[in-house]
Image (cartoon, rainbow, N blue to C red; front, side):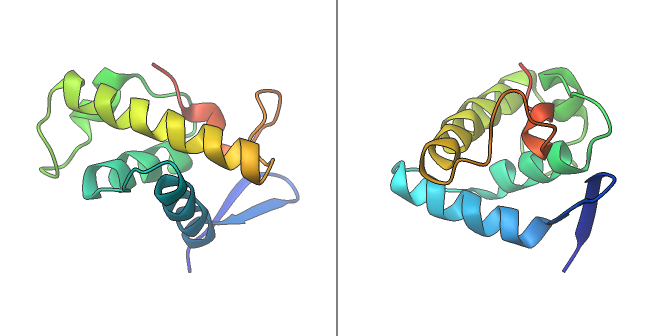
Length: 104
């Protein structure tokens, strides 16, 4: 598994976060498509917030390199993260968790 350090003392397993996102997507009637998974990984690994234009530039042939593709993925991920926040309670606006990189 790939470990990610968000800040001193906070280690997150990326695969665990993907499992939570998969479950939340299913509950919301959505799927974590290949593009959504790639965008989510970009957000998790980013050192700073990413715009849709930055994300589109990093789609690496997975999807259309247009900002609209990134916006659709971000919109869906926002719904999934809300479900995680509601059911698990780990995503809060004031936290420094990886979701902080979800910007529009």
